[in-house]
Image 1 (tube, rainbow, N blue to C red):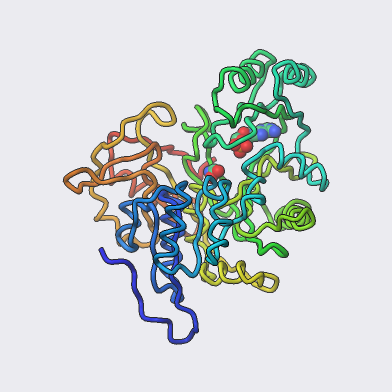
Image 2: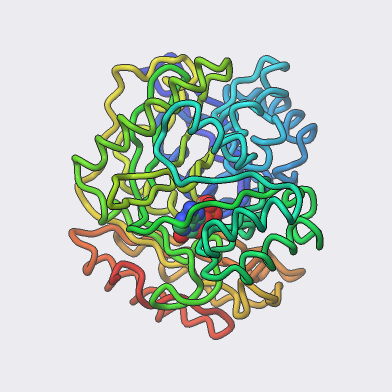
Amino acid sequence: MAYLKKPKAFWSNYSMNILVVGGGGREHAIAKSLSNSPLTTKLVVAPGNPGIETFAKCYPIASDDIPGQCKLAKDIEADFVFIGPEIPLVLGLKDELLKLGISAFGPSKRAAQLEGSKTFSRNFCRRHNIPQPEFKYANDINTAKKQIELLNGYCVVKADGLAAGKGVVVCDTVDEATIASKEMLENNKFGNAGKSILIEERINGIEASVFAVSDGNNAVLIGTAQDHKRAYDNDEGPNTGGMGAISPAPALDQNLEREIFDNIITPTINGMKLEGYPYQGILYAGIMITDEGPKVIEFNCRFGDPETQVLLPRLSTDLVRIVQNTIKKNLKDMVINFIPQNAITVVIASKGYPGDFKKGVLLPSLKNFDDQTKISIFHSGTGKDKNEKLVSNGGRVLSITSVGENVEDCRLKAYNVIKAINWDQGFYRKDIGSL
Ligand code: AMP
Ligand code: GLY
């Protein structure tokens, strides 16, 4: 299908050519929101996926192919590039685009260290008095063991670098933590990402994800969500990239949101500016609400997946305007609005995920669900076979979002659609929104 090509918006001087980098459910939701803006003239996504292909031109260029993405941005005369995943950000795609005179939404390589290096992030928070668990850095097993014993094994072992959400082991005992540390430091479990590790104090409380957008000087909240990372119902089973999400985060009220904004988001943006790497783009703070108040579990330098699939359907402010104001450092007085409704998303994953799973498995037709009110089907890991049939192409395959008056209403609608899709080679959690 031809890419979205609208007439120039007559009420505006703008007509935007936009490249979105990425090809998962997050990028499907981002591209959908951008395509809804009257300011968007041309929308291109790389690599994209079959869901995105129904409304935007997709090019088979990998997210981490920095020269390839730069060339595409140049070829389509992109007014800006929206960088979805963390890897191209950490590799410095934004910096390379800027050298070509092309604007990008997302932090620079140095600013993306907030996600790219957990050691950087923890030391940064320490320098700026941002509340977080105690931690110790180790690049040999003896140093790791000392800290593990100090914490009686009740700790969290983390690979320093990016490990696709798998580099975190929450431990109860000295043995467990020692094995996890050895796997990373000595058995090369996460390659270079695990050559140095953190041993953290294990904190307790309720988790929430808070998303802010920053222009380097000022930040505005762009939504909150609760992610469900464990594979199975009742938060059991192995950690995954996320099996579902709900927005707004049930654990947060306005007071807590303000506290997180004032004590975590604002000092982070101010600190990054002070240290010479102003933070522009989405700042995703993973927060634990402890008895001592909210603390940072981790920072991410981009939108979450599947959280974006519940954040953006609730956003009523034009996403292109938000990006423009970010790039022009003009967020100070921007008000970001949401529809006063809830959203949930439930991920349908390939059987076996997050362990081994098959790819290329035929998916049922999704056409019947396209025009369901307040339901969106986002493609996370789909592809086409040689007969152009829709097949699975990843661990997380689809995310089904519903928006409604309350969470129960959302659950009813989302699960009705999932039951009707009835993909017997997949599985999903049945308790998203009910915990
Ligand atoms: P992360 O990949 O850093 O978000 O960590 C994955 C999960 O591990 C988080 O969602 C938390 O449930 C848990 N976690 C990470 N760090 C800590 C910590 N210091 N204390 C307790 N739980 C943690
Ligand atoms: N859902 C977790 C993440 O995007 O990092």
